[in-house]
Length: 281
Image (cartoon, rainbow, N blue to C red; front, side, top):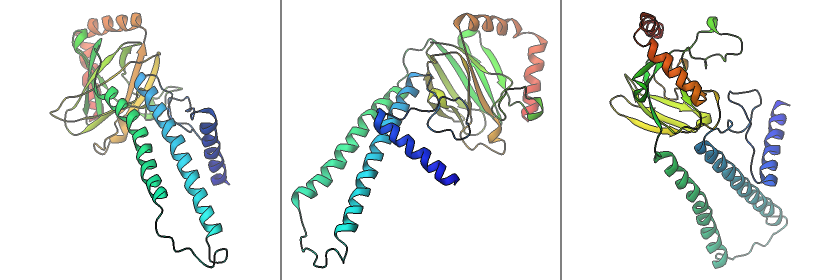
């Protein structure tokens, strides 16, 4: 029964995609029961990723339906009982040209938006600020070179310390704070082993490799808390180094920056950082 329910939901999603010109993704920031589709897009890159996903879903659905129809026709019309004397035809030039040219045209139609999206992801536009994300075993560090070398250590909040409404295994004690409607350049590296900085709603996923600087970008269109995780198998606590990105207004980001700069030289800030590292170990 559960399989039938799932199959029915899938069939409904395909039907909506074919009828409405695209499969509308579920609007959620976290995994939800019976959730379907991609997370809600909040960056230009993720909007394009969702559009490509919808286009591919429609394309593959049409191909599967067409091939299934051909198989049914072959089984009905050309079985031994319905067609006891088979034809001896071995070639059909028009048919052979068609089944060669049509797949090539389909691949070209898929390749054009794919390459366009790849270019958009790789070529970083002029950034308004830079954040450096460093993966450690097993926590994240964020540095703000444009805001006076602000440095933050971000560890996962343990189950016993979670507050109401905080998602388990996704909540960190410190978030990467960025302003809304701002092009953010993210420099990513690893301090020990290979990690990966990934935030699904931003359409961001890039490896953090020790001794190498990778870079990506995003421009969040609305405020809120957005969740991600290390998506590279980096050790026994790989599943316990979440990524929290808090998108705030420009005014709130300026206030946060001033608070971080004021606390940078205090003992409380030093003790907090030392405790975070100790907990991670």
